[in-house]
Amino acid sequence: MTATWVQVLASYLHLLAVAVYVGGSVAMEFVLGPAQRFVPPAQAQVLAQKSADRFLVLVWSSLALLPVSGMLLFFSLSDQHLVSSGDIVSTGSGRTLLAMMVLWAVLAVNGAVITFVYRPRLASKASGRGGGARVGEQLEAMQRAASRVSWLTRADLVIALVVVLLGASLAYGNGIL
Ligand code: HEM
Image 1 (cartoon, rainbow, N blue to C red):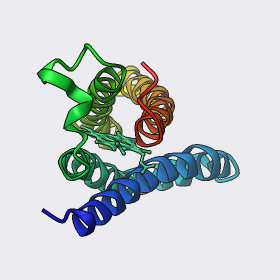
Image 2: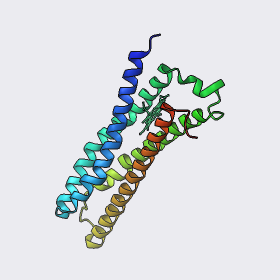
Image 3: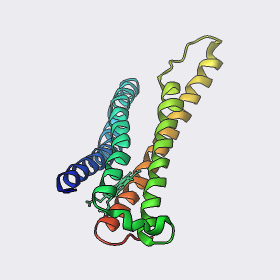
Image 4: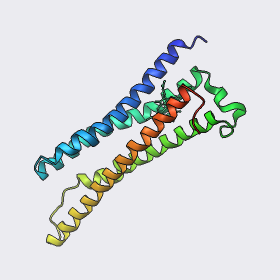
């Protein structure tokens, strides 16, 4: 098979997904996040919620595209020799590829926790039922959720940057593990 166009397409999609994931996370963390401090709290909360909702669509699109384009790269580049004799842990490149896949899974799990556990908590409004103490508790729970989301997104950015290093070491060498 002449794999050139498949390689170009796979590489294009893989790098595009990396750019959207890493670039988006950097913009959220270092541009939008700090800018929110200059906006009144109620508006900052709405801005954070709306931008996070939109960003999560990009996150899930790139998380879905990464393994598909990665596998396409793997087969089109004839990278199967990286995993010689089917034993992925016996070579440096096999271990590097395995680490990429495991770290991708960590990103996906963290994304699921943010989307399905913390986002609903942040989106729920303090109802006022049960009096002031109850509202206080709800606000505290929301603050806890917000700080966990922020911790998880920072961890995701660091993990993604490590995976970029693993990818580059595979593309231009034999992996670094
Ligand atoms: C299941 C998930 C993934 C699989 C199967 C996968 C697979 C691959 C493969 C096979 C390569 C090509 C190695 C070569 O050129 O010989 C590659 C390159 C690369 N990957 Fe992934 N990958 C995955 C996830 C990720 C993630 C999560 C990131 C970063 C956020 C990433 C970033 C990169 C980068 C930057 C390259 C180098 C591309 C280049 O310079 O041409 N990959 N990946």
